[in-house]
Image (cartoon, rainbow, N blue to C red; front, side, top):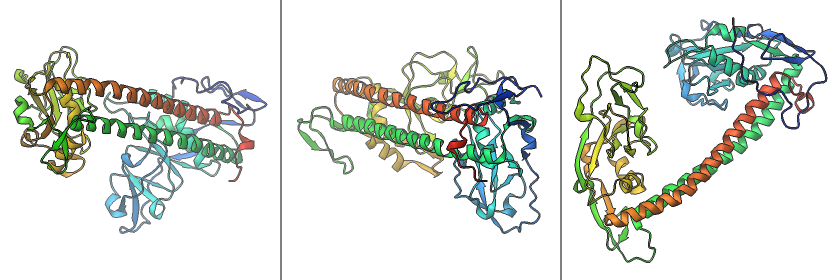
Length: 467
């Protein structure tokens, strides 16, 4: 099986870790030299790949862990709160057991490292999506070592290059997994490497968690700053009055409480015909997806190509300056709002979006987008949303039209917008720097894993050798 050469994970010792004393040629170009006492084996000789379920001895009423893809973390964690009986999952699911390694086989989950060592499964067994490869270590292999191998640069990069299928849903073939060349140390050394990586990656993950928590705090600060500005204004000494709304409290005395319907020229909902499962090309017509407004900034790439045989409804073509609101989405993203900037032609409004055209003398568009993300508006949206689950909520036109805003005049709206822009830019820059630090830590973690499982560093004195 021809294998693509990956980007080298590291050709030098990582940080303070030293190389082995003697090496030999592995015979694999991308792997290079390996420690002299290691062997190169195909993964199928270290593991049973996708073993047969063997469920005949399990009673139908036995409870087992149930793991859809969202329960498998990129950090190797598993959410084990879901269960099913064996009878419910005998057909159409992947079966695995404690000490199996599971690896996502579909893009983008595979590239993002979705995989785990199965531990603590209910009654020792689990079931999940068929989009998983199962690796069951044999007696000469340590399961945690196999898990770390699947996190290495070479495994993920070559596996991604070997994917087959359509652009929208490619899969890593079983043949790749079976025939992947593994630099294989003795079993006791595999245990020492796994123990070393457990300890070192745990330190890295703890640091990443702290930085992610700091980002959450900054995002909360950002949201609070916006909510304060669009409900109380910028002058801490201004005279205040009762808004007349219990959950809002006082507002500046010169502001007014207005329903959105008195600040609009029009509101409309779009059209969602059956489209192709790909973005439209530059000259093709495309129908926007609801995700085009997630995160405040409008994303025109979130669209699906309109089939050539369908005539576009020209009245729904998006224009610069349109204000779009998500009307059907998860609870967190419901009501996401964006302004359309300069945009290419031939993009159509979908029926999961509302298009608003504001009265500029009553409501500044940028101010409106900021206010839509404030705590007061989020309260109204979540209060009035309908839907059976948090995964899909809806807001009606009536809800949008009757949203209540505390509003100053347009000049003050614009001054508040400018202030928010300056202050949030500082917070966003700090969040960006922390995000970059997190990515570097993740890259270092993968580099360390890759160096250890390919024998580029000798960690035997730093890891337990217990089997």
